[in-house]
Each structure stands twice: as C-alpha cells, then as structure tokens.
Length: 283
Image (cartoon, rainbow, N blue to C red; front, side):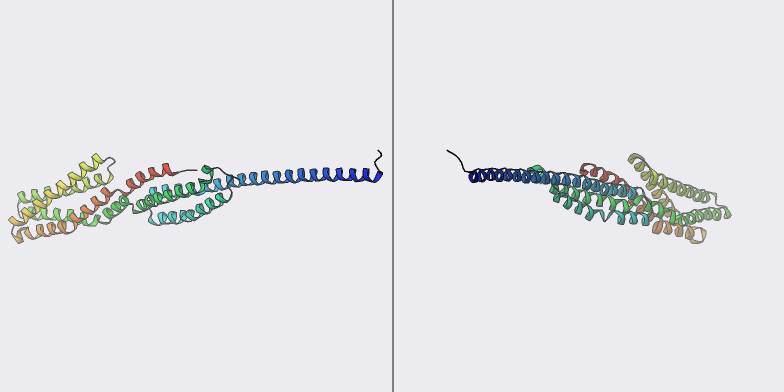
C-alpha cells in the first residue's frame, strides 16, 4: 500500500512539532531549574552578607559595653551608650532580612532560625543594658571624687586638732595636749584606712580596712565627747565640742557614703554581669 506524499509530509511535520514541544519543555525545565539554582545561590550569598552585618552590630555592642565599664568619664560613657543604641533596630532589620532570604523549602529547624535569633538578640540587649547601666553608675569613681571633693574638710579637722593641742600647750596642760595629738594621729589613720579601703583589691582587704576605719571613727568620737564633757568651755571644751560636732555632722556621714559607694561596687557588678553575655552571643 502506497502512502501519499501529503500524508508523509503531515507525518513528518507532526513528528517535528512533537520534537519541538519536547525541546521547549526541556528548555523550560532547564530555565526553571537554573532560576531556582540562581535564586538559591542569591539567597545564600545574601545570608552570608547579612550574617556579616549582624557580626558587626554585635561586635560594636560588645566593644561599646566594655569601653563603658573601663571609662571613668561620664560624658564619654554617655557618648558610647548613644553610639551603640541604634544597633538594636539595625539587628532587628538584619534578622528580618535574613528571614526573607531563607533557603527554598527549608526544614523545620531552618524555618525557626529567625525567631531563635530574634529571641537571643532580645536577651542579649536586655543583659547588656543592665551591664551598661551598672558601668555608668560607676560608684568606685564616684567615691574617689567625693573623697577628693572633701579633702578641705579633713584638712580643717586636722588643723583644728593641731590648734587644740597648741592651745593646751599654751595653758601648760601636757596631758590634754597629748590627747589632742593622739586624736590627730587617729584622724590621720582613719583617713589612711579609708583610702586603703577604697583601693582594696580583695574583699578580705576591703573588710579589714572598713573595720579599721570604723574603729578609729568610734575612738575619735568617744575621746572627743569625753574631752568636751570634762573641759571648761574656755579651757578647750568649746573648741573640742566644735570639732566633735563637725565630725559628727560631716565626717561620719561622709565616711558612710564612701563605704556605701565602694561596697556597692557597680564596676564589679558590671564585670560579673558582662560574663552572662558570653552565653548569649550566637553569631
């Protein structure tokens, strides 16, 4: 049976069309695969860039926090605090961008990663804010500045006790002159112990010098009160009472405040709290 030429042509065209459709299908599949691979590579590259930006924000926060703890300048600490504040929103934006660049068809753990990062970042911000607040409180420097600001008071008390001893000497009263000089020595020891207390490295040393300072304060208060009771007003009693009043009104509260600041040790608390940030660094 002979096949007509027209049927042969129709058959050949049909075959060519089918081959063309197959080739188009393969081409479309290849293009789609290429696009998916390109999208996957693009997202992976974007994630790498985003993670680097996250690292930068994190490092800036750590450096700023450590610099605040180390600083003793209030204006500098505020500048450092202001400098790291924008990092909170920057990191949140980076995490949002990271979520938009997740792998295609991620597994459950990968899908949950942005929320995990968000929670860890919130925890880190909370802890570092506590550290920064303690660092800016800076009670150790407050104590040193308070003590320095009151040196004139201590010098006057020392001078008043020296003048009292000279007064007794002028009255040929060596006994009371010796007591006044002893009180002056006790005051010097009090000031020395106070400085040692403020600069003590260990808690044991701090406790030792704190107890020594308080002991000298009690001895001075008791000795001055005893002198003031036993001396006539014009025989040194008035001067002794004035010194006692000044120490009671200014000296004792000053020492109490210095001890409160040093025992508070916000710098030590900041360093201890900073250790908690190590467990929250996730990048």
